[in-house]
Image (cartoon, rainbow, N blue to C red; front, side, top):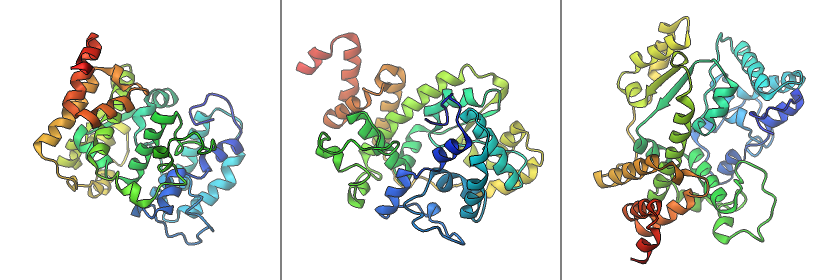
Length: 340
């Protein structure tokens, strides 16, 4: 069961869903790679909270309250009493509750890597205004390759490409007897800081990020082309950094924020103007652009069963040769090229 499931559930079932321990945060804490923004200073820290950190406590509540632990405790008393309804309606009721508890008049649902779920989000929040934030694909790949949360997310997808299940997104209890050793070392119970660090900023991590960015681009564009123009605002990250006040004012007015000027003044200093921390030369950037553009031009390469195959070819033969092979394969000449 997930938040996009159409089946009705009780408030207690919904609370259990959103408050279950988050594997990504638990693993990052265990290996000592928890991002600074996820290290909390609760007034009354729950015993073992790091190992039982859930998504709503790790990602959502800190942006709303200086004591997210106390806010979490309030929700734990109220949400289980929600009436039986679809998860979508539970989300609306939860967001309204959070807005009321934090003294806000509006709420905005914001999800990282949400393009994977574009169809479900557009359907669940039908008719609501949508802000689509896009960024240069290579700069995004560099950023993704440095983020502990997103790198572990990528490792989970890497495992799923191999064995068909993402242990960082679901309960993994099938044991290790049939799992390849190269995968065992990446599982939540086994991964070490040294292995994890080998993925941070690595060229292969950036290339794999490009593959997933291309998949998200394909999914989101296919969905957004059917969204009425009046409820869709496209924003470029580069415009936000170049002129934050103007860009934020566009967003505020589009969302109907009543005190838009005050909101812009509050939000502008939060815009991160730091350049990417991993410099790339023209050859490296060109290779990543080429890979992205090739994938976008041939969506058949973006299927779940193809990502691992494409990455293996890129790793073994280099980007250019791998893409040439993919082109010939589409024309039916793949075997001849492989022999040559």
